[in-house]
Amino acid sequence: MATNAPQKLTIRLTGDWSITGVTQQLLPLTEYLASLSKTDPQQTRPVVDLAEVALFDACGCQLLAILFRHLKLLGFAPAMDCLPNELRNHIEHLGFGHEFAAAMDTAKGYA
Image (cartoon, rainbow, N blue to C red; front, top):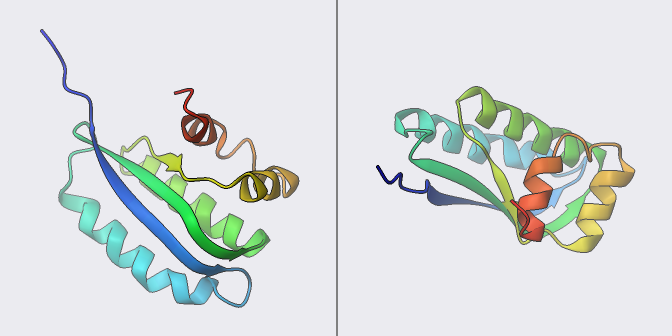
């Protein structure tokens, strides 16, 4: 019996993910997570696109970790896409590399 691969559902993060901008990201993320409540985690794989993130610091990294943890609590296996090397290095430098290890491997094309 063949199993279908989960459908990719892109979550595009944009703008300021620093201490000055994370509060602007909360409402869109909350609305997006609420919309996933009717989505089957076996049929869908959220892919977080980071190409348009302009600013990123520890506060943004913490919010990104919360997003990933929430997606996992909902039963999803989130991945990353369009992860610029500078942002990848920043995540690892801030000590969050372990939090996103599997997702960052997917962004490299390994998973």
